[in-house]
Image (cartoon, rainbow, N blue to C red; front, top):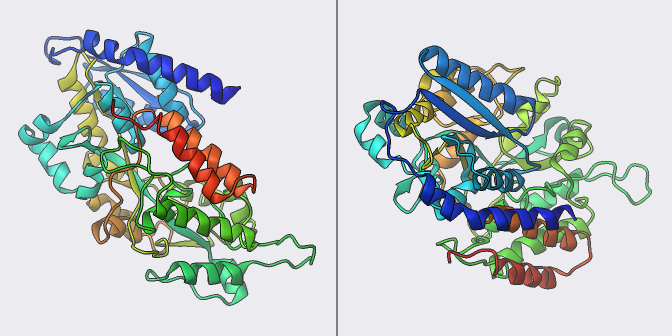
Length: 438
């Protein structure tokens, strides 16, 4: 019921967006409009509320004449957030900026809602300086063609977390950057233990998230040399050979007993800390849960190489909406969020780290030098500086419907209700009506 209702809401909201964008677009500057900004953001929990309030308060302190109002928007995941954002905009509410990840770029662009920042990057010396300190792959993940939608102020890439205590207890060597899918499977098998002899392991070698694509199947699809969408993000490719290969590999891990069926990421965290899961995939955000709780028995490594290796990275930031009455002022806010002063202030400590990777390379270096775990933390930025990144980021305009469809079919496959072939065929059929540029 909830999925069906959400789909109806998204379809209705998105249908109205084109009209909203055309009627609400403003070309007035910050000098002619009121000194106010409204910033919409994903209210995923206390961290989001605190982070956005601190950012707004800092901007207002630096600009006393400006009033920033925050609009929190709920959502179980990025897809749910974008669905609710679409509903908000279609209802007549028009924030100046909205917090998005790479999953939302196509949504904003295809509905003619976002104001590209190319002109600001060319004319603003501070903007040029910030751009020079950001890996090109991160800016590309926020671009549509040659139009950059925002400067990212944070990002995450997919890496493998491993429990160092479990590895040590089983005498298994720490993984190396050049490991392969075969190496990974052997490692996961060596770490899987059924000490009770009841046929259900006490410790599983690996698992992955059931409620998101990014830390779910996507890194495996990328390293099989594939993607879930075409290069223009206009067609689904769920039934392609690389996707089949990746999903079959993951399904084999379950059938071989080295992985349980995928579970929500919060459950993965709990079982990883308890030593019941030896490895899982995620970005930097788990450190913000583990370290404050006093858990530090972990490190990270690249995903194992399949037919190729590609870093799966997604950015986050505050694009300016065309509905903004103060686009120049909104640019100042976006630039402020990505500035060195703000980035450096959010490094955190070994017990209270930030939950994303700084977009500025210089700040990322300072994070490592500050001794904030994981020990292999330089890998985060190295993964986009030294390795190719998956492009395009597979995020069509109807991301909420797309995400729920992919998750529904992968859950059927990994739950043993569908074969890989039949599940991907069904996924492809349903996605063909969702992934479109028409």
